Image 1 (spheres, one colour):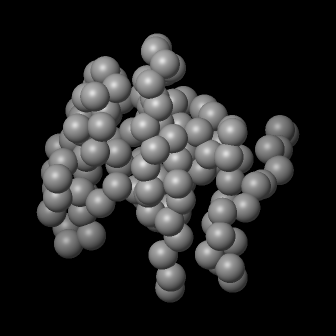
Image 2 (tube, rainbow, N blue to C red):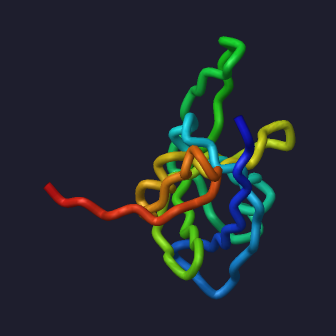
Length: 119
């Protein structure tokens, strides 16, 4: 299985004057995105909750959550995001992908737009 890296821009939903460009690994197995806490702090984003997450090895960690405005190819939405520590891999999770209307094509490992379906 290959890795899909996606270039995104992030900003504070309450103050969109400063954007930061990041390369994140798209991870369809991760519910939330993980963005470095240092980046979120620079943008003035504050957490609204703290959650416990289980790691692949079965151990648990606690991390703050906050809302981040993420833009990919001109399309932007607010998404819940984990404040990542230095040891955490920056990720673009499936929640952000779905909110923005993207999926990873398993054959090409590229980001592809999806139809936004309303049932």
